[in-house]
Amino acid sequence: MKKEKFYILSLGCPKNQVDSEVMSALLAQSGYDLTQRPEEAHIILVNTCAFILPAKEESIEEILRMAEWKKKGRCEKLVVTGCLPQRYGPVLEAEMPEVDLFLGTGEVPRIARLIQGRQRKKQRSFIGKPNFLMDAASPRLFPPSTRSAYLKIAEGCSNRCSYCVIPSIRGAFRSRPMADILKEGERLAGMGIREVILIAQDTTAYGRDLRGKPSLSGLLRELSSIGNLRWIRVLYAHPASITDEILMTVAGEEKICSYLDMPVQHMDDDLLRAMNRKSNSASIRGTIDRARAIIPGVTLRTSLIVGFPGETAKKFNALLEFVQEARFENLGVFIYSREEGTKAAELPARISERVKNRRRDILMEEQSAISFEINRSRIGSVEEVLLEEKSDVPEFPLVGRTRGQAPEIDGVTYVRVRKGKAGDIVSCRITGADTYDLYGEQIG
Image (tube, rainbow, N blue to C red):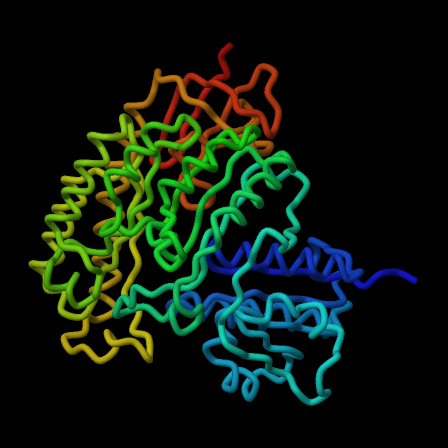
C-alpha cells in the first residue's frame, strides 16, 4: 500500500519556515511522504502569516487556491496552521467550510496526531495557548540541497510595539537554553549546513528570561566554536538593545558575518514613542555609527514603516533625509497596517492608502539608487560566496550569496565558476553589479 503524500506551503517569515520544517519532519516520521507538487498530495497544509493585512490577504488567497486541489487533485484533507487560525480561528471555521482542520501556533508537536483524526469528529479547530517552543529534539526536514538553515533561538515577543500583534499570536518572549541551541547547531553542522542564521522576534533579547541571563554575544561565541559551521548570521536585532559587546563579538569572531539586521522603523521621536519602540533618533544614529566603527566593512540592513498615524509630510521628509544620510546597504519598507487589538489602531490622524503607497515608493526609489552605488563600489573586490544552486544566467552557471547577503531578503551573487559546486564557499572577484545583485568570477 502506497504511503499518503503531503504538501506544505509555508508563508510569512523565516520563523514560520522553521515551524514548517518541524511539522514536515513530524509527518515524515509518522509515515507520510513529502511531495513538492500539490496535485499529488493527499494532505495539503498551509502554514499562514497574519502579521499585517497583505499577509492575511495572501494567506486567504493561498488557502482558497489550495482548496481547488480537493476538486481536481488527490487532496482529501486541507489543513491550515499557524498565525491566521491562532488569531481568527472561530471566524475562519465559520467562513471556510473547505478547510478540514485549523491548528494554532501551539499545535506543532501534535500535527500528525491531529491530522490522523484522533480528535472528536466534528471538531475542526485546535487553537490553544501559543506556548510551543521547539528544542534540539524537534526534528526538521530540509531539501537535500540545503546548505543554509535558520536557527530559532527564542519564540514570542514581550516588546509590545503598539502596531504589532505578535505577542497575542506567539505569546511572551521565551528563550531556548543555550546548551539546547548549541546541540541543534552541532546537529545542523553534522548535516552539512554551512551557514546558520539566528532568528527570533528580537534576537537581542535572548537570555533575559533565563536563569543566569545568558546573552546573544555569549551564544555567538559558543556557536563559533562548532567546527563545521562556516558562517553565522544575525537577523532581527532590536536597535535599542545592540550593545558594544554584541558589536565586538561580531567583529572579533571570523565565522560571524559582518552583517547586522536592525529594524529601526522610523526616525521621528514622537512616532517612535507612539510605536513603543524603546529607542529614539539619537540612539539609533549612535548605534549605526558604533556598528560601522567597531565592525570593519559591516553590511547594515533595516526596515521602515511609512504611514503610521501622525506621520506628517515633515516627519516623512525627515525619514527620507535619514535614508539618504545613513546609506544602508539593504532596506525594506512596510506600509502601516491598522490591526485590530493593537494600541496603534486607536490612534487618530490616519494616513490615506494613496499617501502611504507614494511614501513607500519614494523611499524605495531613493534606496535603489543607494544600493546601486554601493554595489558598483564593490567591483574589483574579492568576496567569499556560498554557492547555492544553478543560475538562469548562462554565463554565470551558479548563484550564491556573499557574507553581506541574507537569503530571501537581499540580493544574490551570480558566479562564473572554475571548479566550485553548490555547497562550496569560494573566493570570487566581483566583476559587475546592478541594483541588488552582484556578478563575480571564481579565483584561486
